[in-house]
Image (cartoon, rainbow, N blue to C red; front, side, top):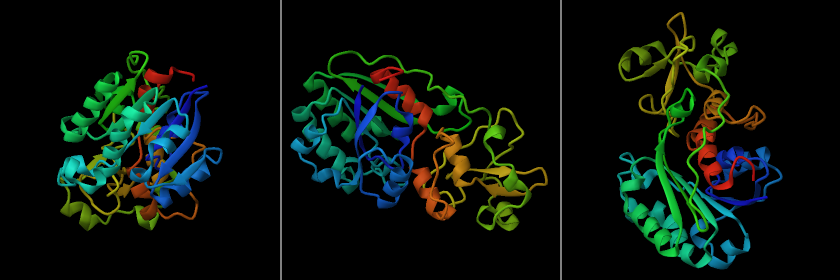
Length: 300
């Protein structure tokens, strides 16, 4: 049985992607709202609010994890986040972990971030540290749409191991179906107020909105971001109904598109505007599973 330390665990995208038999020995994040969702979904996992840049080598080694999962903040590597890279304060925790890697030397490590990270100074420092410590590394840009998922979420992935070459990526095990199978069609009949798109707004942003038809068997949604529900453009897709109305995707529909299992639930009292940022900051479960199985195998 392999043991996993989730660093930047969020609501649990990596936990949902773990192969059968893997055991979480620690799940750390500073976002208390995300941790509340994580603890509800995975009550058996030891989750804690931790400032990652405050962790010592001894604390990290004390988890005894076979694999570290890292999904550090992406804003330092995005245009919207001004691309400040290693100079961005949000990179401190990652740089801190990189500085401890050579000392702690976990048997395996996997990382997810936005495209562009692979051209960053943080990436160069990570690769230099891994190479110097003797890790064997596999890297790729992978979109879940390549695995049959009707959602675009192209991300950079890295897998590294000390004692062996990481295997080629798996297929992610996606069995979720097409967009029409994942949309909650009951919401179309009486659209909740928070999901409605005002017709005047739809006209104003007509050419900028990413519209998808749930009855189109080839429909693929855009990447949902933490800005969904606040920004109308480049934050996700909108369902176009037969009568021409548009509606936002509900958080539970986005979770389905991200490959979370049906048993995964957000707190029922959480409104969409509080849930969308948490869901938008999460992971594509099939893509993460494809990467993790390269290190842990289909069962751990």
